[in-house]
Length: 418
Image (tube, rainbow, N blue to C red):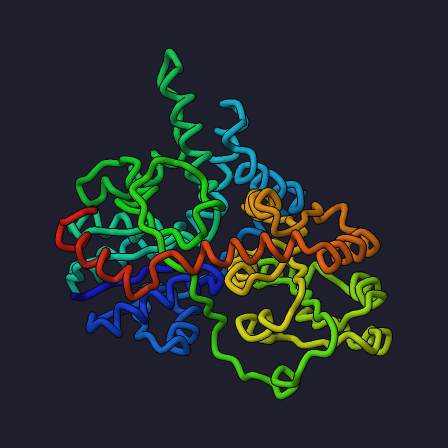
């Protein structure tokens, strides 16, 4: 079987698809990744063949520029974050305004040049199945136009579908038809191929979710589950990581998305100094200005990048901004977490993790160095956090491995759902 993966040029959205693609190839299927030119080298480094279907892609620059044109970049980020975290509770006016902004300023940028390219390549290569990350709606359109089954591969809590369900429910109750930015955009794209919009263009025919069941939102969608297998990109394991650990180790990491948007890490040296007060070693995968390196305490090791799949098994706690990859890898290795959420669905996932007992949450704007230090002290001192993290790890490992998911995907491609 031929399987086409579709992802716009964002590493953090592409990486969760890689282990599934490896499993498909190991089972004898032919896999290709259709993407924008800037992601091609990343795809090749993963061992998968890339098909560039669109050229330049500077969505982060475009989003920042569009927001600055209105004079308030941070306010726009906050509105988008509010939609992802609280859209299921919003009234109609707020939902409509926020969906309009997300469609115009982000999703259209993500898909620039991709929709027609995906449809054209799906017709040319004729795969039996299309897998697409949740913002690459061209994957769903290509599937609909060609009649190829398609599956949405999530990389976080399904907050956008939850907000969309609220949006459509409120619209259905209105006495008069209400505007729908998503329907108008995707409907216009489908009209070019003689089709119309329906919700499967947003949700996929099926959803492939790699989160533990206790951290998933109950949305009633046809869903396949898979065990999370970490993929951090190409990496060399440093020698110091092979040495025995003599006392607790804490990881502090900023994640890919925030660095891409802000050009730096949102976790900085003051937090390192506070963590260094604990009887522990700290490994910080963050950017630090050269002038500040001399002020970093001796028990802090700075590293621009360390593969978290190798680092976290040696750690007793991890501090991060709530990125899906970091959080899922920490769950995989049973590591208690302190989450300082700021962007996207990070608050929802952080609160689900906290409610499961495996971590603590401090909103990013309230994360003083002292608060971070005191919360990590709790994670190290109170055994309940490690116990809950171990339970989440067991729950994740009980889910089907990617090799088992391949069988389910084969059945979907053959029209044998379930």
